[in-house]
Image (cartoon, rainbow, N blue to C red):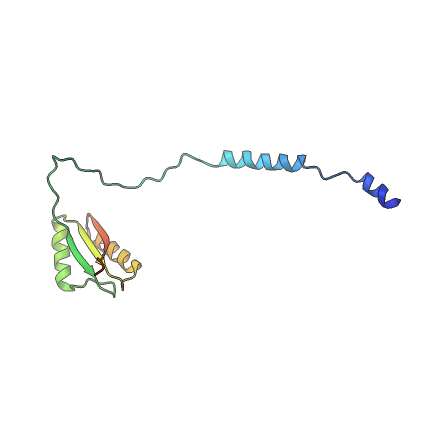
Length: 124
């Protein structure tokens, strides 16, 4: 009989306070969050038909060690391409890690290359 009296005295689990807490958390996160932040990406604008064709890019092959496959000859071609503001394309093969390609791009940009890009080599 005592067990039934204890059950009768204890109130049931009230979900009202839990719902209030959840509502307050939702309101808090909505006020703190910002939904209008947009990340801007630099994009090259499309050229019109009246614009003259751009110069042909210098295409280089990246060696497996992260250097340029042509060695000193490629270094001279890179310097000439940077001076002429020609775009540079680095072709990476299957044995070259992506990080090595990104490091080579960073080196080109530090040297003053206006436009440099990675391109995978075509599979035979």
